[in-house]
Image (cartoon, rainbow, N blue to C red; front, side, top):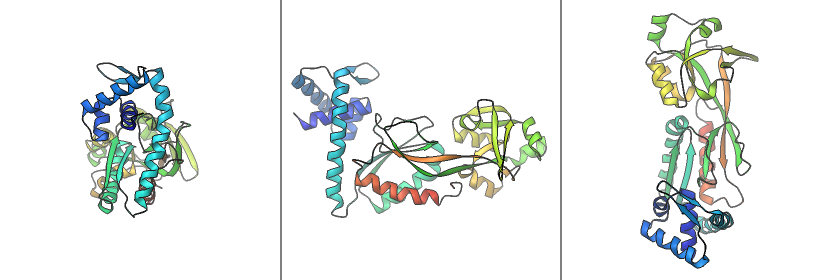
Length: 299
């Protein structure tokens, strides 16, 4: 069987498009199309369903993909292992992360890693959704909260601290917030993940835990929208410390109710499997973890 055709098939399934597969394999899209056509002809089976928007495997294609992906992972790991014997760390790594920590912290760390290893290419995807590492072909992902998937390994990195802040001009306009009762009376800017189903905010003061009922004027899944709304003085709200560290130092935002913190969120580094982990992926993990832990706001 043509190894290149099978590889093109696996990448097409993982990317959901021949264009994405061609980009990954550094070949043209017509070449991917030819590989797929030859593979289907050799197997006398239809492997892919093509629509105007996406490409998905048929039942036969899915069986072939499931049988092939582990073998390819093992081969890629073995080839990288041979390269690492020469002291070189190179290749491509595909990483997923939430937009806040990804842009603020992860991106600078990865650029520093590339300075030390110029042969490494990084595909960094930032979003606020849940991701399927295996199907979407990610080598690593940072996520808030322990992932439920059984196909991944989760390594706890630390916890993300959140504090309560407001813009100085908001406090001048609407008055100070000196008690939990006053905070409960105000409308807040929040992320979707920080509130309970009962629309309460979990706060801690030492060993004391408080579930405070709150009202929101804006709820969003984007941390940058929260920051922009806070800076504009729209309302106070809970926010990740790493997101507003510079704003606090410059006085653009002020901490309110400083005795309280929002219940921290656990941060995990996840990867599909350690059985065929490529040396490059292992090197990225070893580089990332201590530098993330050294970040203010990650405990």
